[in-house]
Amino acid sequence: MAHLPVTGYHESTGLLREVYEQMMSRPMPPTYRPPHDDAAGIIRAHSLDADLMRRVFRISSTLNGQGPLTWPQRELVNAVTSRLNQCFY
Amino acid sequence: MGTSATDRVLVGLARLVTEAPWTLGQSDRARAHDAGLDDDAILHVIALSAFFGYLNRIADAVGIELDYDVAHRPPAAVPDTPPLASPELSAWPDPDAPRLIDLARRPLTDDAFADCHAYVHERDRPLAVRQRQLIARAVAGRLGDAATVRALAHVEAAYTELDHALEAFADVMTLAPWRLGASSLDALRAASLTDDAAIFDAVSVAAFSTTTSRVTVALAALARP
Image 1: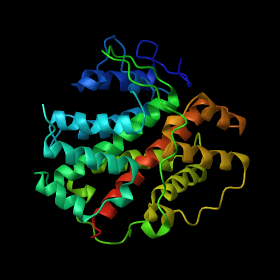
Image 2: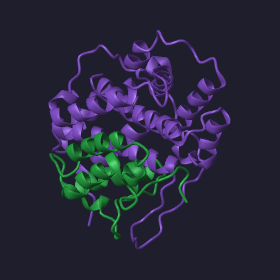
Image 3: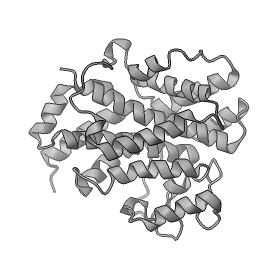
């Protein structure tokens, strides 16, 4: 159970729904494609602020799926970072 | 499969960005070059690691659950883990020294960060601009980000209970994200920040500030011999 309310795609309306649709229609890095039909948790975690969601994942799109680091190198950097921050996500 | 020299350098850079970006220096840049990583690659590591630290913190603060099928459940965070170190003033990199590598060499990322930064810091609700500034300054102070501390020097010091709670929350976010949990948010609620959107605002300002300060400090530090 999250510490803050989280609104998934199916319950979303208005701007949040628009942002979800924009995001889910883009090619998404494997990290963000969960095995269910809602947006990944880290995206849904931003559902209290759809404007922020859009801006944050714009940063993400300029860093992931782009070089010069290769996909395995990006995964390594992200995995090390998460482990040091003790975040399993 | 052995770890390549390049991978070791990537891991080393990610570790420094995550734990002590003020300790980077020209020798790290030289080491990266020797391992075949040019300045664009170094910048990519810095930005990626700093940004992933933002996602980690949002995930922890909001408390989202792992929603991927994984072969092994990852270990849980250990709240007793001591906080990350903060640099002594003498270790803060000079914000005015010319940079060897700047975010401007990666314009799409630079623009996206600037756009997000403006959104996070320039609105006046749910949190007031001053509250955002207090959070940003507290984070910057913990990471040795002299430019941000200087830019926010005019902001009056914390004086309300909520001001102090926001600064304390910024500290946990910056130096001990593994301690983020329901109780961290309850501390904000107890200081009268009861609206969920306002709490998420505090979370995102603090988390995003850790990322931008980390990038700023890393790039300033890299220029040092």
